Image (cartoon, rainbow, N blue to C red; front, side):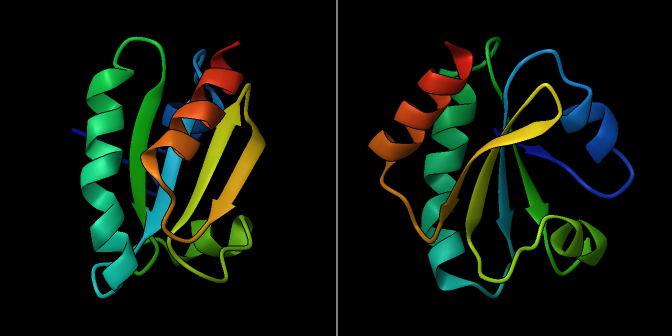
Length: 106
């Protein structure tokens, strides 16, 4: 199951993480976000121990959405050493997300 990131834990969980972190920026009313949710949860299970996988509800955490320039959702960002190393807009096939995670782990 994907973690829940918010404005209170984002720095510790994402920016200070020693492992790569996939962050799914989403909102409950977003249809494509709901379609992507099971894929995000699958990735959280498959990459457990090597990559953190979590979600940010942009309605509940508007400061993070502004900070990272989120203008459309879903937006998936991959962070490594506190920096964004990949960003994908829209509903992505699982294979695309896996490829990006594998590159970040490399």
